[in-house]
Structures are given as structure tokens and as C-alpha cells.
Length: 297
Image 1: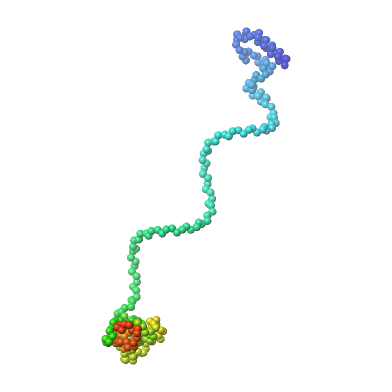
Image 2: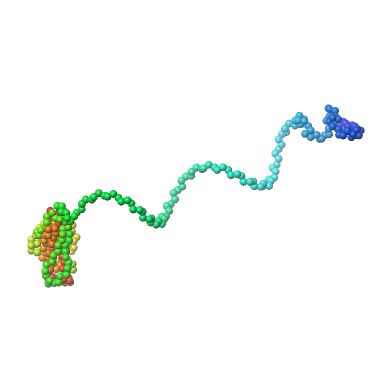
């Protein structure tokens, strides 16, 4: 240290002595210093920075890496920073897998019926259908064994004591194979058991009619007050015959039947009630109602 001070003192002295001379020339430059004449003793400690040193000198100054120091204590949390700007929208993600089918919901209430739509245009006319079979005709001859049925009767006011005969005719409705003659018309009288306002005592048959009354007509057994009305399906006639079944009558007697070729005629006499029946409240009412059956021969 003393040596350094001595050198520096010497340099200072020389500089002081030569100040005048140097002042005349200006500042000292590298040209004024002899190469290799300056030593570390000539440089003030701490006056040279790393930039004044060469690369080699700077490399020589770097020592070996020291051991890692202990981690310092955590600093205090700084204040919350400002919210950053919204980032750009990311690309759309791929479609997810299809979810499971949900449970079927309950059926909703029936809605109000809509208004009727307008009538559509008429469709084209359909093709003509095949000709149907020929139906029965009143002008056609009935086939053998065919059974036809009908009613015949008359109801009118005839004063008591007026007497006289009355008649009514009926057509068979079709042509019989053989024309109907008088012997072919058979009048049958029922056995109704109730005598009321609708039917009087059982009528009798004309003498000629009585002779043929049971010539083949099937007379069903009477089942009660209704007479034959509830047995119509049981009323029949033999082939070629017309059976006339008297269903109701009052103030009529001496019934007889006649053939009329394509039909029949029923005839009777007006008769007064001689039984004294108190239910005969209308002695002028006279009627006959009958059902006839014909079987083609």
C-alpha cells in the first residue's frame, strides 16, 4: 500500500512539475504514454468498468458458480390486476353423441273437431254393372210349388135388418199355372174364444162351401184369444188350392168362396146379432178379415 502511494505521489509530483508543459499541449493521449509503461498500480481502484476490459479479461473475472442460495420468504400478495381483455372466440366444438330417447309423453286431450271440409268434386261415373237376374213379375207364371200369401176383407156400416149379401175380391199377385176355379177356393173358420168389440160369434159357412171346407187345408190348433194371428207361418194350402182363413168377423154369416181365374172372391150375408150379447154396442158395424194362402201346382 505504501508503495502504491509512493508511486502515485511521484506521478503527481511529475504532473505538477510538468503542468505547464502539458497545458501547452492539451490532454494526455495514448500517444503520450509508452506502451507497457502503465501497470495496475497506475490505475485507480474501481475506476475501470467491465466495458473497459477485454473479452478475455471479462471471462477471467467470472468465477465458478456458487451453491444455490436458500429460497427467500414469499413476498406479500400484490394487488389484483386489471381484468384482461376478452379473448377471441374459440373454434366450434364437434357435435356430441346423440342422447338416449326420452320417455314417451302422455297422450294429450282430444282437440276440438274441425269444421267440415268443402264437398269434393263428383267422381267420374262408374262402369255399368252387370244386368241382374229377372225379378218376379205379376205377368209371369208362378213356378210349381211357389207359395204366395195375402189378405182380403171388408169393413163397413150396415144397418140392422138391411140384410143383403156382400163380397170382396183379391188377386194372387202373379199368374197361376192353372186358373183358379170355384172348387179350388176353400174357406176355413177359426175357433176364437173371445167375443169382444172386435169380433162377434163364429160365422157359419154356406152349405156348398161346407162340403169342401176340409178338402186339404191344414187348420192349426187355436192357441187362444188371438186365433190364428200368431200362427200365420203355419197356414198352408195344398197344390192348386186357395185356403181362406177367416181371422175376424162380425154380423157376417154364410161365408162362401169363389175362384176368379187369377184370384178369389169371398161372399157373405149381413146378419143381425141374435145372441143378446151386451158387448154388441155397434150393431151396424159389419166386417170380415181373412188371410189366404195359395200353392202353385
